[in-house]
Structures are given as C-alpha cells and as structure tokens.
Length: 125
Image 1 (tube, rainbow, N blue to C red):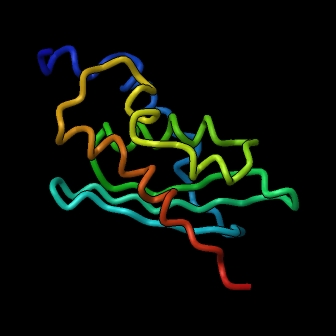
Image 2 (tube, rainbow, N blue to C red):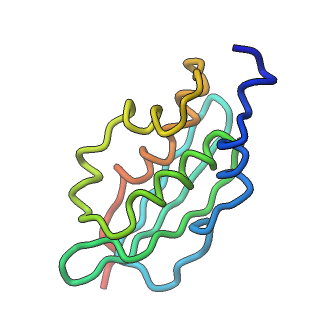
C-alpha cells in the first residue's frame, strides 16, 4: 500500500471531525497513554451513569492523524455501552475499525487510545 492510499477519506473524516475531542470537567474516570516511538499522547475521561454506562467521553490528543482518528472512532462506538466492554476490546478490534493496512509502527499509533482506556482509574471523590 502506498502512502497516497493510506490516508483514506474515512481516516481523514475522523481526523477532521472529532466530536469527543473535548475537555470534560465533570468525569468519573481518567486514563492516559503515549507512544514513545512517535510522540502520540492521549488523555481520556469518561462520564458514566449509575448503571456504569458511558454517557460521555472526552479526550485530548497530541499526535498523528492515525492516533486521533482511531480514538475518535473508538469513542463513537463506546457511548451508551457498559464500561466493562473496555476490558473486552483488543488491538485487533481497534485495527479493524477502518479497512486500511497498518504498518507495525502505525498499529501502535492506532491503539494508543485503547491503551489510555485500559489505563482508566476512578476519579477521587
């Protein structure tokens, strides 16, 4: 696959349209992860309801279009789901959100948001 084909319309759409790339001031969980190889860093916050369903997601991201696009897609799929689903999501699920061929280094970019979600800790009350 050539670089020209790598940045598909779908990938660029999610990079340009990130409704969950925002600061949540009222959240229940926070997690962060980075990719030391390229400098991607994502911090994610979740607001959950009394039944542990994800009401809202906010994240801040410094990094490439791949890490931010995949975090945007992942966020979209998590709204309304129980937080326990995060434990069930694996790298292959994330990598298959878009049908593009990822190099090993780009796989790390694509999954940094999942690492942030796996690092979630409950906010002190």
